[in-house]
Length: 432
Image (tube, rainbow, N blue to C red; front, side):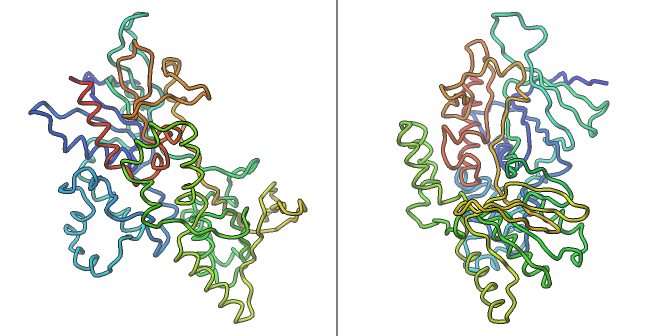
């Protein structure tokens, strides 16, 4: 049974992770000459707010300053800031006494849940936007002023709901990437699900574990397994020679400043390539200094004790995985010699990163009205709105999937607050 909502929303959001949570806060705080605040509804397929829950490892730190929260760079006085959260929890003095700009991942997740609780009335969990379509009453060639949004989920009365909206904001998150030809199952995991998978096992049954990847998540998983499985052997499969250090120095970090988005967006194709080439080591396939040092100390301690528990297969990649009864057979190829080797492990963890979200599936017929560049990518305006055919007056905004137009911060937390403010400003301007 399908239920229809008679209200036309200013904004309907697909997904409710940190990006659209930040947008919801910006909408809540916007004031525009006494005009009504834009109406909004968000839908999230997961049963609750979640941000990399599978990697909330004990003691794991954020890689950005706590000031790069949901709001501070947009509105330092916001009651939704991380500092406001610490004050509400009674931990502000203790946090300051830590003399550390980097909160633990667990505490930052708790902050996100604290902020979400104030806006829970705007989001429906266990519900996914499955289709965005043109209104049935529209005629060919006429201006399209609103869109129909179909939502499905067990949490909805009748399982289906249809809304109308003037604007859509898509933030469905990153897609876990696996090695070519490798599929996830109960013994082959992606790092995004690591903790859930790991805690479901009896640790005594995990004697041989392999971890593929050379970034922050891979190193953290290897370190965690070393501590949690004192009798297990661990194989780290690294495409480069070893873990590379993340460049988080002050000048390099300016590539994440809000103003750097303009430099990227308005730059030439060549200048964008230069930015990626010189600054991808601020985030991609790199590891924080303290994680590298901590892991190396563990390896050295094992050598002193005469126990080499971690084997590093450098310059290697996974080129095949087969299941044999209760074992997983991993074929590893050396990129230096092109020789292959087979490993029999209990579990393979793939910390192999993520692909950007692809909005095309939920855009459906609207995709044909979205303009693309010469390389087939969406043309995205500076305000994160997809450029569309003139008759489509509605806004389709992207929170993510804009690395080709807006640069390194597109899939990161660094620019959430400012980006949300820019999207809200665009919505208000277009409403006028």
